[in-house]
Length: 332
Image (cartoon, rainbow, N blue to C red; front, side, top):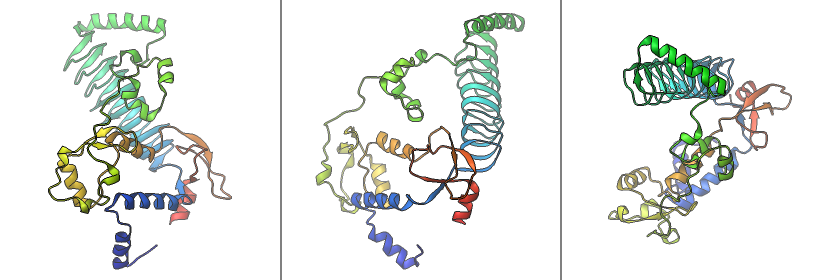
């Protein structure tokens, strides 16, 4: 609905967005408003022969997410700025190519297999944190090194011979090309970002060989603020309110958290109320507004349209999903 400037400002004031109750009421109103509005099947622009979500300027990308300026990649997330011919990667960019089964590899790296944090490196296999290196196998923490196996230096000829023997044995055992086993991780599955993309229960994670952290992090029951008695509006907080002395309780998980002076200054400047959820729960809520890194084959829901596509909206979700053409016709 269109408003004049004065009407718009009055409307915004009527929502009382400086109060917690006002923000929550507006969230509900907004969610109700968009229920019957169609959504485009994917957040993509200028893509050619590609499937995935959150992509821009990509070509021949299959099942990729959060990608831009990339081509000929498959089963990747966060591939960008010249990533080419990559597969099974998480974060690969800045003119990388021929990267397989890696985490965080970039800066003109190439021919990197089953490695992590090897930037500016070439012909690396099963290496961790080895920047600006080449022809290394099973190494960690090296920098500007070549022809090393398990951090031991070899001649070029000896390196090739030993590497060939290792790969032959790994292929016989059926594990060459697999990433490092999960039991090598220093963290539990529930401590990593994996649980955000691929949620698993404790039982499911343990069955698949992952660790699980049972220790409860944070504190409970130490709060000094009772939200039921706290100011609803940011404007009601006195100027001398010492937020560094206060401990808050999350309305979602009941964990304690703090708010520092710079945060309070930001909330005052933006005229928005203090958050009543801890940072972890706020992060989880934001993620729920983003599509998962998973695709379902569906048909356009516009009556009379038979277009089909791959989308991050699962069939059991309530949103109305349109193909690109029908969505453009609807909104323009």
